[in-house]
Image 1: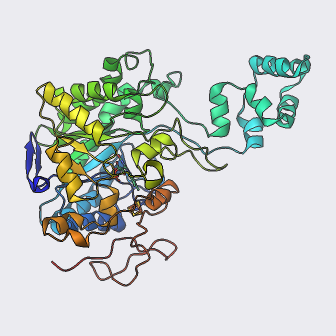
Image 2 (image 1 turned 180 degrees about the horizontal axis):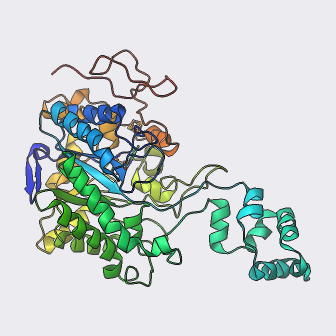
Length: 468
Ligand SMILES: Cc1cc2nc3c(=O)[nH]c(=O)nc-3n(C[C@H](O)[C@H](O)[C@H](O)COP(=O)(O)O)c2cc1C
Ligand code: SF4
């Protein structure tokens, strides 16, 4: 089968084309450490012996980030090294282990309206004028600020919103969120100076921990993707044209390469399209792919959507989540959003791969999105939709599925139902499990224990599958 053919490109050396893309399982702790549960999670995927596993989005900064896995300091290295060793042991050296490196900007929960109006809103002359225009008369001009805030709270909601700037409406309705175009904020203006060394140091730590490579997270709603986005109109040489938007990801790539050398895998995940109004299209993605591939990237993984811009309005006290709107559904296609999500995003990896090959570039392309059978995987490889088959949720539903296929036991594969129970847990930062197996408490985990979720109700790892 094509799926089990090896692949060699520059530093990338895979025993098979079976690939488990990054998935955040919320197994770390408030310190961002690779806990025993993190190790067990990746060990379980290694049982299926894919060609590669990409460890979840891992923060490159040494700042508190809730239970997000982190690699922003040397102290994270020993526990990450245990994860790498576990994957090597459980796959008998077959599975390559990469780690996805992420940077993200600030985001806050949706505020309670009265608190926002009283504490965060900064009423200015333009607001007073808009309120006067909407209400008639000049009463708003004379009110002191406290009275103005209180009176504004009595307005019908829509009328109050009409007096605000677009960013203020978003702050109130969705929660405050930074963007890469907020260059009036010094730390945002400074991103091009700050990020390359942060990513480079993180990649060097990954190498020290025994990983086989890194994947630069240039997809979805995060900083490097936002630089690549067509919505990025920074005026400092890092926004506007395709060339300028790709400049920071390329500078990050060069810094990372300088830190880890040519014999360590450096790949990237990018979006085939953003799926938001005014966002990047497949033509932008082809251009980004060419620039990154020419700069010496070892692989390109293609995703889609997953943006904040069209996210569902969060409840008060919760933060917006980039996988809840139409672009989010494009990222993790479901039965509900797509009818049949199988292979839903392969047209994008196919187009990008064709562009690379047309330019004489052999950079391997990872395709993903609803791949759940050997037939689909084989077709994707045979037809040139990708060089490597990524399956995230199917691997969560059944981590042994690659092994079962390879050993003619595909009839035993537990198929993903693509209803996104797992994603719903991710959204609430709850330990991610699969509805197909998390209530099955009969079988113990490989080490004889049974790891359970914080509430004691769900098993945290797919039941072991023994007949070998
Ligand atoms: C629970 C969960 C967490 C995810 N976390 C990440 C992540 O950390 N980084 C990333 O690039 N994609 C992430 N994804 C997206 C997947 O890697 C994949 O692109 C998507 O699920 C579509 O592939 P699939 O149909 O094979 O699941 C996540 C998906 C799920 C379901
Ligand atoms: S929870 Fe549902 S969508 Fe997620 S992996 Fe399991 S079957 Fe698939």
